[in-house]
Image (cartoon, rainbow, N blue to C red; front, side, top):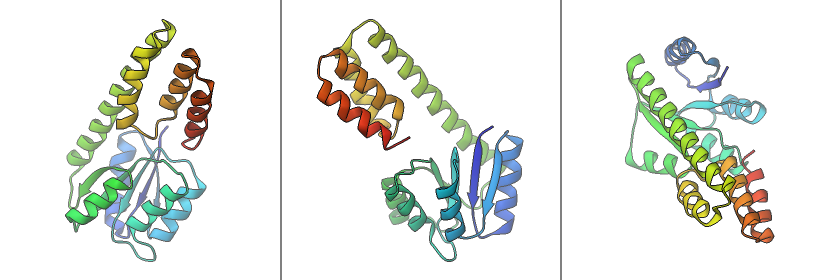
Length: 187
């Protein structure tokens, strides 16, 4: 079961997200302020975090900045009642994967979750095609595909492992070791 953390200071939002996510099959934990959310993210393994921007004690943006600085690649969906271009750009640069504006409906939440699932399926299909190239020792073609995939998903440990395998196949063990090491940062 996938674990999700909801960090929002509004009790009704926490309850709405919890109920909707549980109906979708997620195990949900909550936090009511930024510091509590930050501590939970650092102390647990979550598949997804819903993070409000305006929080007591520590802003959502600061939570996101701190977890990325610690190398925590957990996908984060920003939720806010006060959307600004500045916040959207900053959160995107920090690696948030979606932006959910309050008030939102259960249908809007489902649409975001479905979009994320479709993107994950697309990544899996692309990885399978690249693995077929590697199995056939078509390393140059695999390398071209991997570079494109890595630009879209720079935190994918699987892509780093595949790049290491590709460079090994091309006889470049130095680059292979560098990609293995880089991939460990996202584990």
